[in-house]
Image (cartoon, rainbow, N blue to C red; front, side):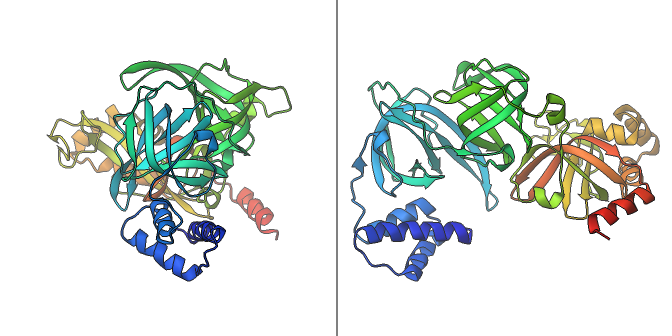
Length: 433
């Protein structure tokens, strides 16, 4: 756990104890908190146990209406209707863990909930439930429910006329949003399409696309028809942020305030041009949509060139064997795994088949023909090295992240002509010589 987050949690516990007239020792609290973490107890559950240890947390959770829940770290029992529920898989210490998150509401308001290592697969949107002994935590000034292994959930027959809460949203540029944020944004719709998806066996129409402001582009999903069109400038209050592989995505759902506005804003062409940035600046982001880096391909990594994939799962075969489906007839593919360095940092890059063909100036059929003639699959990788390695490039794509760091999934690549005089002028301007 980061030192900043630890300090915030200890301060929250200290305030809760002092409110009850209990003197506290910060170092002792830190020691207790770390002890629980070492036993693989979640930070939220650790907070609850420390409070109980000092006798201020009731064993029975307080029953509350959702609109009555504040940001104090207490255990509550609520009844309501599941407004939304989603799941995602994250890798923690090399182990895949499934988490669930969503929104529950009653006639007084709504509140987000989340659960780690707790199976909620039996719950669906629209279910009426009672949630007993959920822990309240604060996120960006708003309360959330944390469901733990000790939480009990049961379905009920009660019907709820859900009142959607207008929880506090922070104003944000698209470049500054992060997962689970509740934000107020202004953006232009660059693209939008209607799609049919299946959610727990039921067909649903959603609207997805790309929006942008001066700072960044972001993918978005609208879970109802807001009448949005390409080119619209919108103001959205209460937008919820999810992420996929670290890339933030805006969710527009029921109960939000969305308005089409008219004001000075960058044009479609200006926003669609993409944002060029330094790699060192990107390292502080969990992920980004449609970014551009200019640098040098300092390394072409193993696994570049002609590869063969499993026809069932698309995994790369090793000696004709898929680690899941065994020995199969592989499907040929091309890719480049490169490291790009711009002088401020370096980033791993994956370049797919179409762009690899662009780099090599030939298609996969010609590559296969050359490999068969030479009886050497490695010659395509060597050709990539001779064309790309140590060359300046302008590369564009989506920045994703996982436990291994950042990776740029390329959507375009251009070889940059290296003009020594122009490069010298650029260095003089940058260094102020």
